[in-house]
Structure formats: structure tokens, C-alpha cells
Image (tube, rainbow, N blue to C red; front, side):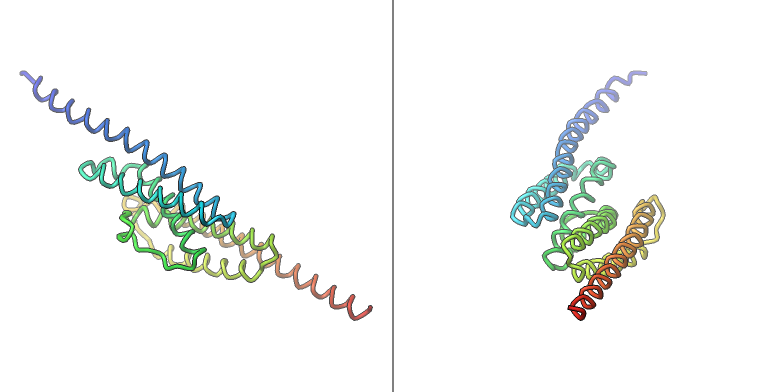
Length: 207
């Protein structure tokens, strides 16, 4: 049995797929890096830099989608999913700080499962935002952000699907712990602030 033609055809297809895969890997690494840079800049309130990095990441996400249009197996791979969720996390955090409505998955061309994972990661960035606000003495901002964290977590818990559709359980468990810890931190901060205010009031009355 001569299978040489079959092997040649398989080799040709796999050579092409391997080339596409290497290009996709390069793009996904850059998307992850740019998304991380965006989040760091946002926490520093450097919106200009954040917007520059986010725009570049968005362009690469579009290029990735076009590159893998006929390679759905690669498009649904773990490293592509990771790049998508990192981008979504950065994009949503930017929208949150700007006070702008979150886009729908189809509006940014991201698969729904990947979007959900990015939404789960957003809770971690909101916790960090709460802690930074507390350090700055802005308890009002910290409390507002906590309420939004809790709301996102509650909505995320509505997505109860098998692991084969979206591996969200770990994100949900992590989000629950972050929300609980943030409430504890915020409660302590508020009690400390109330005590400090009471002490100041007493000292003023005695002076």
C-alpha cells in the first residue's frame, strides 16, 4: 500500500499549521505583555500610557482572529484563551475606571467563554484598586468599588456550566475569597477611621 501521497498531504497541512501556530504564539505573548502593561499603568492613573498599550493589544487581538480564521483548533487553544482573558481583564478595568459600560463579547470579537474568564480576573484588579484607595484614605471610593466587586461576583456565579464549555469554577472560587477578604479589610479600615475621628473629636472637646 502506497501512502506516500497521503503522508505528503498531511505534512503539507501540518507544516502550514505549524507556521500559523508560531505566529499565533508570538502574537499572544505580546497581547499578554501589553495587557499587563495596561493594568499597571491604570493603577498608576497613567491613562495615556494605558490607552496606548490597550490600543496595540486590541489590534493584535484582531490580527490573531484573522490569522486563525481557518484554524479553529488553534484559536480555541489554551494560550490563545489566556491572551483573550488578559486582554478582556485590561479592557474591562479601563472601562471601569473611566465609568464606561462594559462592551459585549461580540462587540470586541472575543469568545464568550474567554470573556467570562477575563471578567473573573477583573475582580482581582478591583480588589487592588480598593486597597490603593484605602491607602490614600479614600474610603468612599474603596466602598463603592467593593460593592461593584460583589455585584460582578454574584453575576459571575450565574454562569454554572460544565468544565468542557468554560472552566470557570476556579475563577469563581478565587473571586469569592477575594470579595470576602476585601470586605474584611474594608470593615477594619472603616472601624479604624471611626475610632480616629472619635479620638480627634474628644481631643478637640478637651482643648
